[in-house]
Image (cartoon, rainbow, N blue to C red):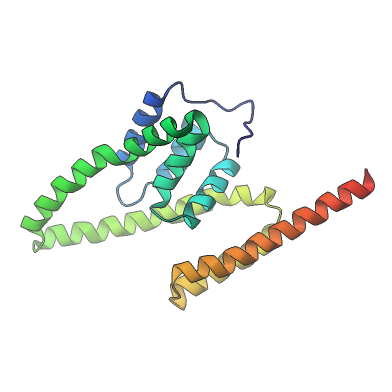
Length: 199
C-alpha cells in the first residue's frame, strides 16, 4: 500500500486532509463510501480504484465504521499519525455536531408521518449509493490475483449468507475472508514460482 503511482496526486497538508474529509462526510447522508470513492479516486486522484479497494477491504475487516477506517489509512499513508488524526477528525467533527442537533430535533418530531416517510426514503437512497459504488469498483477485480470467476463466486456466497440466510457478518467475513486470502496467496505463490522457473 505504500507504492504510489506517479500520476497520482497527494494532499498538500494535514489541513487539506481535514477539509476534504469534512466535505466528504457532509455529502454522505446514509453512507459515505460512494462519495469517498468518487472524491479520493476521481476528483483528488489520491488513490487508484485498485488502491481504494485494498484500503476498503482492509477497513471492512477491522472493528469500527468502514469509512473511518479508510480515513485513518488514507491519512496515515500521506502524513503518518498526524494525517490519520486529521482525516478522522474531518470525518467526525462537523457530522457529530449535526447528528446531535438532529437527534434533539428527532426526539421532538419522531411521531410525525412526514418525518418517518422521509427517513424511509433516505434508506432507499443509501442502498442505491452502496450498489452503485460496488458496480463502479468491480473494474478493480480485473487485476485481482483470484480472477473474476472466483471473485464472483465469493460475492454471490457472501450475498446469500448475509442477505438470505441472515448469518452474522463476522462469521461470513471470517469464513469467506479466510477462503479468499488463502486462494489469493496460493495463486500469487504459484505465479511467483512459475516466474522464477521461467527466469
